[in-house]
Image (cartoon, rainbow, N blue to C red; front, side, top):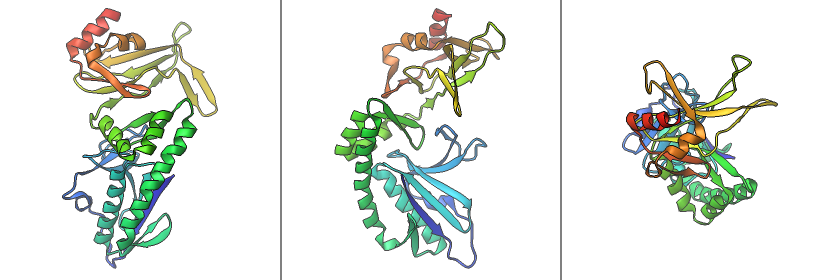
Length: 289
């Protein structure tokens, strides 16, 4: 479920959208996202979409569809979303409409005058609260993964219930996690090369920067209707000891040997690792290799 706004260019001579004017004077940021919902440079060739968010309250972000940059722009805000995201959505919609001389927009397919947008925004706060409660029931004993502005965040049923009762803390929680701007490590599945080689899941770590690892590695690779169980999970770092080589250690052993003051809960299924120097990482890897 999402909130969608479409703005059409009503000017006779249609100019391309000026992104600098959209965010000028605000704390808004326009970034790209890769296929894993992770923030990357908007001009990166791996960017599959553009997203705009408030750097002072990073929530789920507003997706920007600019397939036809001079005629139509579609904005999409996934629900549930914190209050700051609604303000981004409607502020950006107004600014695009102003650039293009539009007096109205299409809100979820219905024509709405710009002067009525504030009333529409207040109604959607309540709908976000409803969706938080709904997803709490859907999560059951598991967790729900919310694609957010800079990375995915997992929430369990109790958290979703609590946020439905205290809406402001929902936005605070999402911002606190994303404001670290950590590297979000994903599973890389490496298949067997020979009869004695195991299938290995690899998670990349980085020196001198925040990074996020799952509490438990994802050992099942899904390919459509098929799935493959992998044998081993490792944490890998390129060039840790020698240039051009990749150092690897057992995943769970790595997590257990990171000092307690260098790690904390990121979300209900992930751990945030605070910056570790190359020397600190070398010591951890050497003790396990």
